[in-house]
Image 1 (cartoon, rainbow, N blue to C red):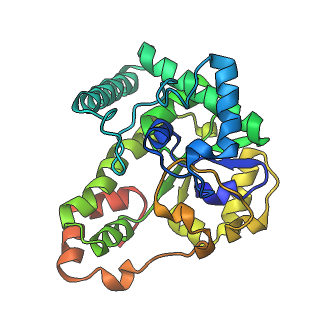
Image 2 (tube, rainbow, N blue to C red):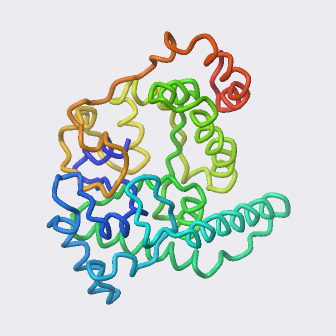
Length: 297
């Protein structure tokens, strides 16, 4: 989806921007193939950040604190310490509690200072990217629901949140084909959607939130592109579905970002492949959530 939107001439595709410090620190590549530290497109962004904030991200990759995010791969162990991971867990617990209080009482307490600072710094990055690359819209697929809520509430006229849902059977089957055990294959999907989908739908104002099904997007990307562009105030471009019209400079994410030529194809291999013990496991542990997300047997 990030690459799809980033194929539009007015949109910048960023990948998981919360991993910017890590990518700079450990020397990971930009999607253009150049080490991100050496990428001319990102150099123009960092020059603007230094000019507006005084922070040199080359010298201090984490010098502009944004949302604390745990990397699962290519981890910067000097930064992502045990203490850091505990801080992330504590922050999430505090913010989830804050959201529960808001839902129960209607009272919304101010976000902690470090959260407000992280959100403001993320907007500094967005503005620097928009200016440097000449794009009206930037797409950040960091996928943190709590951050999305804080951004949407802090910048109601500038931030939109896209929630992409997928049939859990497809997610579960995909993980199982990589060799993951059944509990692990299901856990990330259930954890994210059981907690975060309702959270987003309750906390983000309706005019700022769009929910899409992966199956509808992959099954008809042109129609999806028209709907998304209308929502973002852009002129639709049917070539977006080719994933070949953009020149991406994505920070991080899965390896698909280096394989644009694969295009967009609906993957429903689970319909034939999810059988036997795996099918029974999903039915016992994931079917209820799947129905809550709108998927029927």
